Length: 166
Image 1 (spheres, rainbow, N blue to C red):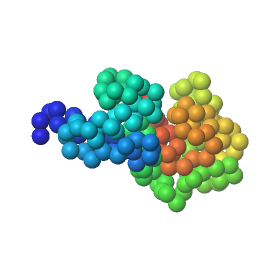
Image 2: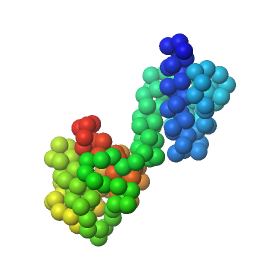
Image 3: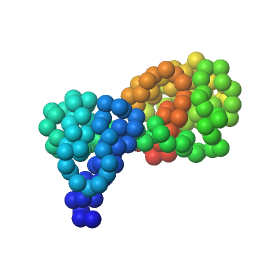
Image 4: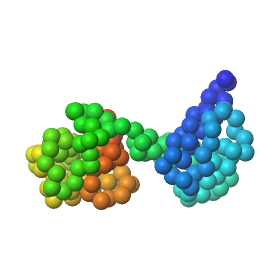
């Protein structure tokens, strides 16, 4: 496979991931060929995200594809491990009392201290209104539904920020 085919295959893989969580994006099979199917998928992505629908992947489009791919992968991946948290521990919402809430609040405290425009929380194992408010803030910043409930998507995105600092 040539370098160009590898790059096209990577693009196609990202578009495929995005299409798994967004039915407006046409699904493409990664084959390394930038043909009609890939062009149509790129155009559907461009239309959805406010770009000119020309099928050209310039820097701005590529950057947004990478961003949306990253989000999509979080939507269908398993919860990231910072402690023994599993699918059975999620979702977390107001009133939940568990070790998973303790770990969530630890992350929120750290992130709140690191990013001054976000609320800090008091660490404990009860999901209270302070926790819900902080979760909603982060959900809005991450451009996901701000329902105050920590599902797999919210958990994975927060954990990524907590672990990588970005």
